[in-house]
Figure 1 (tube, helix red, strand yellow):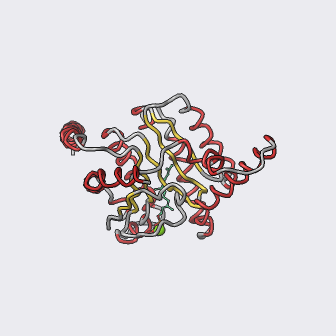
Figure 2 (cartoon, rainbow, N blue to C red):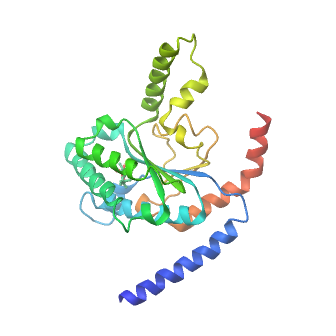
Figure 3 (cartoon, rainbow, N blue to C red):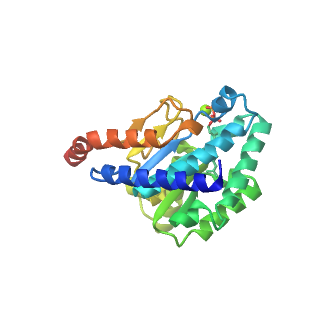
Length: 263
Ligand code: FPP
Ligand code: MG
């Protein structure tokens, strides 16, 4: 397809999305969406692609999804990019995922990246000490470079799991308690020390590939989140899945709000 036609089609898609999003915005919109990007290896297998291609396709799907979310006006997006348990995968696979992560994290700093287009503040959430030096340095560089952005926020969970986040928060609360010489740790102390405390709780958690497990992701933060698990493998996820998740959210929104007030 010629470049001109591709650009024209892209503009038509953008315009149709704008109309669709305007209609969706007449109802309540979520503030925070979280994604478990599952099914990347199955996607590669299904299509007879080489190992690793599924995760690359998964990154492209993530970029499109972020674009839709930010066009729609969703302020916070969190993604589960690599869990602590993923370190137990075959060493070649862990290495290839780390290489991909390094390349893609660095690409976020490019002038034409989505980060600049939408003014995204990026946080990497997790036990970053478990990452290799290069990936950790790249993640820290992106966090530093985007620290002044405030329009929208992307939280990338790497070397993350929820139990580890909770343990680290409790440890920090204990150190603070000793420093302040107070007797007991309160719930609020732990909450303030959670790495995810920079964002409100997710309104919707989407896990692709039809799986309904939480896999130790945001256990502390998803007590009131709506769960949605489309059958699509992560690289197949698209606009229609996002729209469907938002419509479901809007359908039960007033009931959930009432319930929150009763608590
Ligand atoms: C789970 O699918 C996904 C992962 C382990 C990694 C996903 C990472 C990306 C898409 C790249 C993200 C990069 C940045 C910089 C945000 P799976 O491997 O469990 O696939 P399966 O369920 O089919 O086995
Ligand atoms: Mg999986």
